[in-house]
Image (cartoon, rainbow, N blue to C red):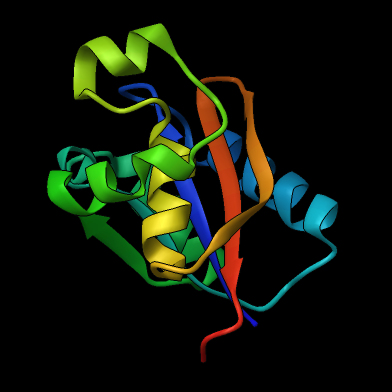
Length: 126
């Protein structure tokens, strides 16, 4: 099974907060075989996110709005703030779903702490 980690964060979020929420989500999923971290293209300048990916030794993939919008109907969490800012119900969930592929499902719905959010999605495709 291919799994993808979707990550969202507030501007200026510390890498430690992102790493902690990713590890918590992986523990909940009882998985350690993620292919990459996925997030919104607007997060390209987030130093904490870039540092977290480096420290987790995972590639960081920035997805465009179209890919995230395509995955949005499969998200289960809704944030009014994220909807107002990005037109998406959840950055973490849509990024995980888009990163895992069209047939993916959420394995861990969005969890958030200290300005960071994470979700995990998977598919049986390799």
